[in-house]
Image 1: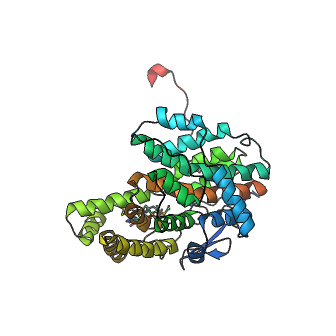
Image 2: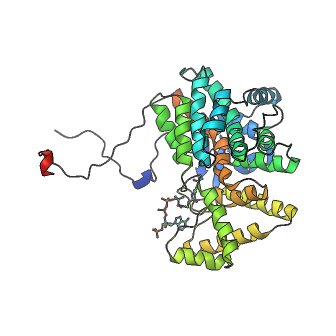
Image 3: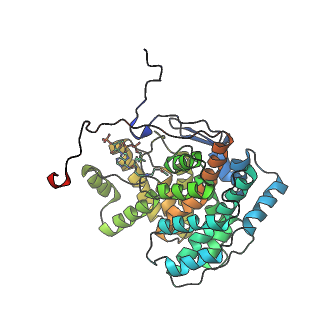
Length: 381
Ligand code: ACO
């Protein structure tokens, strides 16, 4: 009898596989185009706040003033952490813990303090999305202050999330420029199709597990240096170049000759400039001039040209964001957590979308191991 099952498709790393439909973002990897729900990222970065983008991703349309005020107030009201989570960060998180591990564990703990965690109606899921988005910056800031022997700063409960994050991190109100740069960086990182962490999130969500479990898994995926963790590695490379006394071009050539990857370059989908990298590059140039420190910008430009000439690769979102955060005076290992406090909006929007029309995500593996083995007595093994 003929086998009616479709022929299995195999793709290493699932490259080119379309696993589902989404209305959240469109990526044209050949043209370097990125849209969130139809809006060009360049337009959003210039003209929309992170809160407006969060609303757009969760609801499908940009908010009017009243809707924006309501969401901003909800985020402000939800920003404080339960005491138990704060105590965990104070007393049970090692001072030298990996920043993403600390964020992952604290985020996971939040599940037990949210009465809506196990509910699966859309309203409850939407409330969870707001709570997670509100609280993740508080975790990152508290972790950083506690490990430095400082008291965590309670959220101000006013202003944008970018403002409150920088306020909780530094214990003082950020300048308008720093707030605007952080806000734009959050907009740029909010959503990006079925990347590794979002896929992780949807896989976990597809089992009808809860939002906190899915987001905890996504944080774990984002931590990896081939994904969000690359921004920390980029800054390490830039500092290494500075300390080595080598020219950026010679440094890059040496690494490539040794078959090492240069972090912040290459992308599974973009085969040209990542549009977010261009926006961040321009932000870095402006910030460099304001800070009267063009070293990181110039070094990055040279690296970019060298990597392109040698390998035909382009910078991705992690390349220029690293120097932007560096010039804002942010600790290097917080760069990936900052990515997470933005991408939480994309992750949760994908979960809301997944649960609108859920189907278990469950691919297959081709078995390539032996067959016909038999269990012999243990003494003979
Ligand atoms: N430096 C040097 N060579 C590279 C780089 C790089 N950054 N990226 C890819 N290549 C080379 C590979 O060595 C490979 O060469 P080969 O064919 O001669 O063996 C070729 O380009 C294809 O690379 P793959 O790793 O197979 O491409 P893939 O699509 O699997 O990986 C990835 C994409 C993981 C992003 C890769 O480009 C990489 O490791 N980049 C560095 C890490 C990084 O910046 N990650 C952040 C990505 S953006 C984000 O997740 C937010």
